[in-house]
Length: 194
Length: 194
DNA sequence: ACCTGAACACCGTTCAAGT
DNA sequence: ACCTGAACACCGTTCAAGT
Image 1 (cartoon, chains in turn orange, blue, green, brown):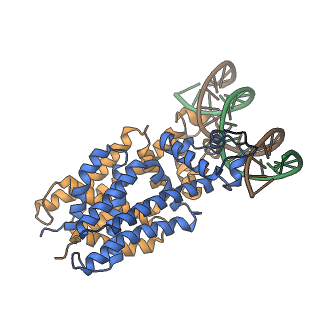
Image 2 (image 1 turned 90 degrees about the horizontal axis):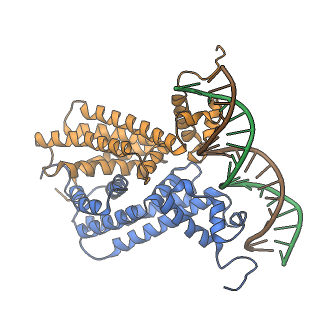
Image 3 (image 1 turned 135 degrees about the vertical axis):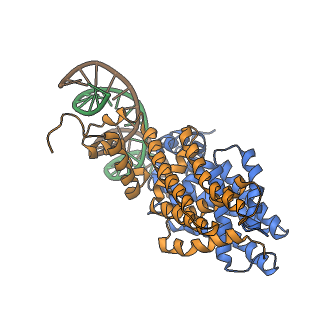
């Protein structure tokens, strides 16, 4: 490491990565701009060059979370297979992200729900719904699934996945993995007897 | 108001009520023990008599939230009517609580997901699932709904409600109210054509 | 452009002391 | 039992100044 007068490549990225690690390891209350700066080896005022204030950093963190999640969901939606396979695949992706990034997911939705939330956050949640909508409309086209407003059907599916993740966050991953297929099947089959 | 050397009736309750108001009006970042103490008219050290530290207050706040919510859910589960009516009623209760107490609900699950979460929090979430389980087993008894592990069926329903609430939090209540019945019906009918 | 260092107001927590 | 007041270490934010 040669001595460098200012900072390394990308302080912004370093701060975000460090923040995510702290969030996962020690929770949101332990997140401090000054400590992030210390870990990055810069003065406590340096982060303000990249994030106007603390909530700006939190929003950026939430944004990266939604970007990763929607990316994986879109990928799962694009993999070939019939509707039921696709749905199970998306469910696994969503729930595995949720359990592997529990504190981040809490932050993501907490920031999205804030009155001063940047519109990018809601847009990304929309993209998340779009990926679910994709397999719904495709399933409707092939006649594999029930007709009706695809937006409502997609919202039902996305709700179940998000709620399952929330309710099982903190539980052992194996436990959630064991429950998830059954839940998806109930969703597919419905509550009425056939 | 007669002068009183120490404090009024129940500082603990005053602090919790004030905290909930602040949370709803200005978000979790604005919650400060010192400010709560100031609003209550006591010294900044007084709250420590009732809450060991800040997270203890947050946990107590989350607890009151879950208590209110599970109470309302149990009441909705106990009202007479067939399965479908009961499910719609519970959905309305859950979602109306969620939209009316968005920041509190975020806090409730964030604290429940914390590694040092008190077990009362998880127990209350269990009670919430129990109230859903109630109408499921009753519906299975009367043959109104699909047989199978009632725990999995209840978890599917609870997941959908929780997820719907999360995804629609921040949106206009009328919008959520308009979407909810459709979502519940998709849940009831299932995704496969009949 | 990017960062430093000092300054300010505020915070959570602790603890001896008061009633 | 319940609260006060002072003290400590820490925090977010701002701003003139440095390179």
